Structures are given as structure tokens and as C-alpha cells.
Image (cartoon, rainbow, N blue to C red; front, side, top):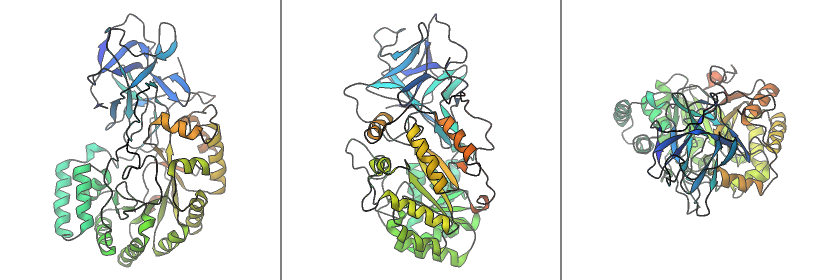
Length: 469
């Protein structure tokens, strides 16, 4: 799989391209992106295939990547006859094989449609990314996505490496013997972790990875893979930092950042509840020194009896990861060890009752998340468990394999459309915040919503379908 942001080279066609349709973009065997005049780009919402247009897409956000998908055939719309079909050869370069091109969007954008393709029999499972539909329109790439957070917290343009290196040197002087600070150096400089970078840049949210173990075996785990056909994107932390080391990093960040957030539960660790014996004293040490800053826990929320003391120690907010609000679907993805979905719900209710800010880290895949069954269940869940925010996150997993897994568990009816789903939830729950990042305490009571500032949105047809030609 190759990544690229190069403009596509042209393939000539006599067929007139309708002005609102996006030109299909594909890749050749060299990984070069080619736009196919005479063919429109198509997106997938589960089994629903439809052309993507200038009205239901956004400009490809800065920092996004384009990826071509091997052992797969792009599904495109042939403008000569309006047929949506697989196209395995470039009609303007006879014999040249072509492959689908997908967009991996930068943070703050949730997919409305995934890349449309057919798998070949030999196709291997795709790496751990999300695969959005993308096309070319007039002067640039456009993505079938919806902006849910406009905060530039992970904007790569605001993270110059020389400033990160300078921050590393500063922290080496301030925290010379702190193993957690050294671990974050590796995260920031080797893995390019935006959260690690923000710590050394002295802004926004700082990570506090702690746990070496987890009590779930998520299909898309990025730090420890049980599937030998998949590779985790980063290594899990190899040690448990002391409470003093954790507090040292947290206090350094809180002391120099207004509206700071420090978070347990990162991509380079297991679930932080497994390290609660260390995290509890660390929170107490932080709160002995300052009432400033927001202490957040990103977690699967599997152990309510373990969570309760952390809430009492001074935890301010909780972000709970889930792919579904239905136990069977949740279990099929998270594959929990020693807990059930009911324990997750118990933790959510516990944190709400204690007056903490609670977010759902909702892992989305078009075709499942916007299925009538999941949408109806989500409405019921939000009525019973009034969380404060949904962080709309893209599921980083092979979309067709995921849909097959979910359809084996539950029927999947015709999707209502991701944009339509977000609109319906907004109408029913007007105080529910949408976002992508963990908010600071200053935003808990204001109802500040990261999408309210956004001038870019997706147009949705009255019936909730993506507009066609």
C-alpha cells in the first residue's frame, strides 16, 4: 500500500464530466495516481454504492494521506451509461491494471462513505487505517467526510520539528530522571505521535501512558495485535512509570499550559484501569499540588469498582471507547476478557452520577454505525445514559472485513447516512457536544461544541441518502 498527496495525472476521455460529480481517481501498479475522465468517484455506505459529489464532500484536509489498495478493483460510475461497476484496467492505457485509492483523513473528520471496491480472492486484510471515499474536483482532492472538530490540536503545520526538539531539551533539564518523559520523547520524535509532540510544544493535551496490559483484544488494536496478518502501528509501553514520574510530567504540562489536559489511556499502552494502583496515587499527587488542569482517562471502562477510587482521587473526565452500544456487536470487536458490556455502562453511569464529564469515543464505520439497528440503539442509549459528548472517531480497520463481522452478529438494514445520523442526534439531543478531542474543564459547562465553528459541512438529501447526480 502506497501513500501519496501528489496531484493525479490525466487520462483523456471524450465523455463530458457532470460538474457536481467528482472525477474518479485510481492508482497504477507504480502507485501513481491517475484521474479517469469519463468515470465518477463512488463511495460505499455498507452495500449502498453511490457517486460522491462536490456537495457531499469536503476538501481533503491538510495532513490527510492517499493510499492505494492492492488486490482490489475500484468500483466507479461509467458516465456513458450511468452504470456503477468494477473497473480493473485503465481504458485509456490498454493493459494497465488499476487499483482503488482511499483517503486517510486527518483528525477531526468522520467518514460519510468508505472507498468503493471489490476484493480479489487473494486479497489480504488491510492495515489499520480508515479508508474514505475520495475523488478529484476542479483543483483538488475531495473526501467524503464530515468535520466534527475544527480545533487545530493535531495540525501538523503547527508542529515544527525544531520546536519539538527544543521542547525535548527543555524537559530533559526539568525532568532529567523521568522515564515517562523519555518514553514520550520516543513517541514524539520516532512515531510522530501528535499528543507527544504537544507535550513538548507546551500546548493542549499531554499523554500519560502507564499500562502495559489490557483486558480486551480489540480487532483493531494499534499497540498489540493478536492477528498475525496485521501489524500494530506502535509498541506498547514496556514499563510502568511510578506515580511520581507520572505526576512530574503532568505538573510540568499543567504548570505552563492554560486550559491544559493530561490523559491516561494512549495508543502506546493497554487500558489504564489495569494500572489503577499506580494511577490513583499519581492523581492524588497532582491534586496535592494544583487544582488546575483537567485529568482525563481514556478507557474501555470495564472495571467500575476500580474506576470509582480514581474518580474520588480527582479524575475530571472520562472517555469511553466503544464501537457499538449493543453488547453483541461490542463484544465481537472488543473481545473482552473478564468483563461484559454491562460493566462499561455501569462505569458510565457512575461517572455521570459523580458529576464527571463523560465522552463516548465512538468508533464509526459507514454501513454499520448508520444502520437503522445501530442508530435506533444509540438513541435509546443516549436517553438512558446522558453522556456529555460523542467523539466521532473513524474505525481504523478493514471496512469490508468489519462489516462482515458485524453482519454475522446482527442484521444490517439500509443505512440512513452518516450525515443524516449526526443531524438526527443533534435535533434529539441539542446539548450533546460533538468533537474529536478531550475538552478542558473550561468547556465542560459552556456546552462548547467543536463543530459550531465549522464552515464546512456535508449536504444531505431529505431522505438521508447521499446526493447522486
